[in-house]
Image (cartoon, rainbow, N blue to C red; front, side, top):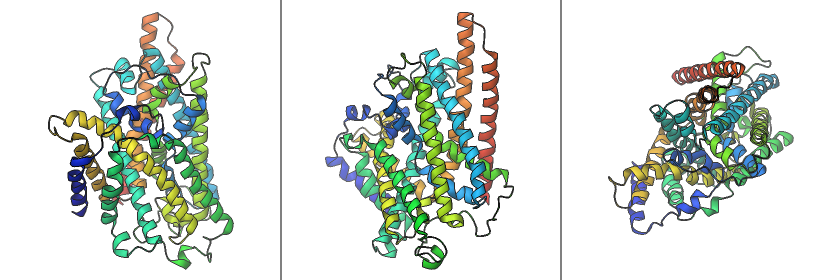
Length: 478
């Protein structure tokens, strides 16, 4: 109830003197979080192709940050649930690299589909290759994606704020009450950001986001070297016993074997689902394709962009998992930064750096989703529509965060359903239909090898989504 009252109070106050959003400023932001969410607004309208002004370097940074986020910090606990032995990193690396290659191929194929059909958005590509009547499927997935992203960000920010408050000596009644922390986060921090008039301060969100992630990885490495978290170490949870009580419980048990045993297949499907969440940027592939500069002079430039980006993404992913698993082992929490001792000063810095990057991206993710709803709610909420819709959406997301506390659950389920669909199922369908249509129009011979390859990838993608979703639902029941 406190959450509802605080957010409703923000709505009332904002009616009188909330600033107006500069949509022109928001529209030119070409950074990670805008790209992650802007599909909601873009897919609903027919727009001209974006201007090709992005260099290979800028596009690479944007695409890397588009994928490198909080979801990666939930992988180590799922790997630790299989084994904490170093040998487990071998099959994990194979899975990460394999899915990265798969994601790379499909990302490139979306660009090829857009080139063949002259489509500038994911939905338009589907409409021109499959059917206009079924486009609602794409629209639904693209609309849900930013809601899931904001939910994951809220969970992460809640954990970071709670542990940070404890670290500075806040009373237990404050940091120990999760609903109160969410209420304060939503009403005092997130809501004002979501109605800012000028979002130009968030232009460097991609660089800031990567810096926050690398800062956390650096803290992992430092603590491995100084052995602060080994048995008997200064910050070992068994000795210090100061790991926050409200954080998610460790996903792995102390009974993890010293050697890799044959794991339950469903655990690997859960990891694959989280990777699908982490690697998913494919609904923005058309924008990356059309915004890439000088691709006509270099036909392989988009391929280079995608390959280089996913090479960095997979490297960062495995680096994060390896460091966190080495540092925390069976004490790995669902959100890796929760595994740090609350009194560790470097951990405070890591949380602050990563939390800042998440906080900076939140209003940009929220922006297009809010505007999509605003356009449709004006007849029902004629006055101060933007502020009221923002408050209602934030209330909904914060309400979900009071129930869903595990980042790994959000990442794995959304990856199994949304990620696999947008990344592994829809792209081969569109590409094959585009090739068939082009063959009929030009009379050229159809490339049967490409059709067979994409048919195989479609079957594998469907199977991954199906078994991943089932594995996640069975894990929830346990």
